[in-house]
Length: 257
Image 1 (cartoon, rainbow, N blue to C red):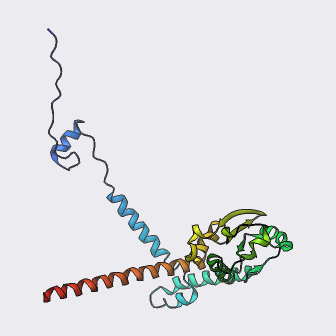
Image 2: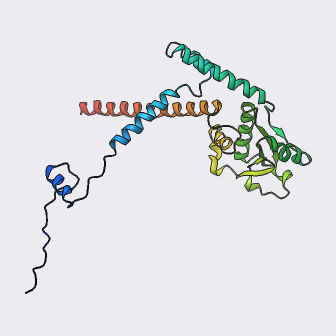
Image 3: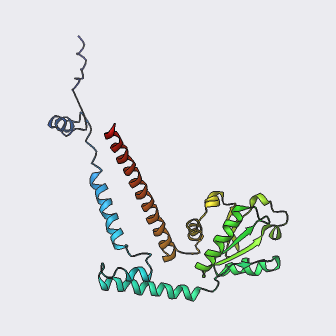
């Protein structure tokens, strides 16, 4: 007579993840797997760490005037530490501030002013359209002038694309070329990937950081980024207030129905 086959008893399980005494017994006997650790403590720890870093770096990107406005809110010694750091950063930038305007290029100058000059740091070239109707080209030329004034330590050049490269397609204008150590390290054809006609200095800042022309913690980059975040927060807040006001007005109208 054959031995009776081992029968597996079906154990009732309502919720294997529930914290119950019954589930603890089942886990102890290996019937259900151990409950995975809760991610809540790790999330809370990450949030606290984020808040700590935000508090420690709350003065990053603020200029001297903005630091002066915080005299009644911050410890004087702490503020003075940041003032000294800002003054050192400003002095270092002024020392490297050797450009300050856009360099118009001609073909004979290209090798000297761009390729050779890039041995000393990134050089950015804007190949512009010959047509006044090219809106993107006009937008970039204006940003180029703004950036050249603000980033005097970075060399910005500009040249008609048709003069730089014979037969260069008008549809590819504007084109941004970034040179470093004698080579082209980045090329952007039209502004399609960097905001189009809505390209802003924020987009240009990202390019400058990416190619190593400025650092990600440069106070000019941080200030513009912070201003943009505050503007977006205010926009969202204003939109929320308008929505709430409209809903309240609708509720008042319903009261009269």
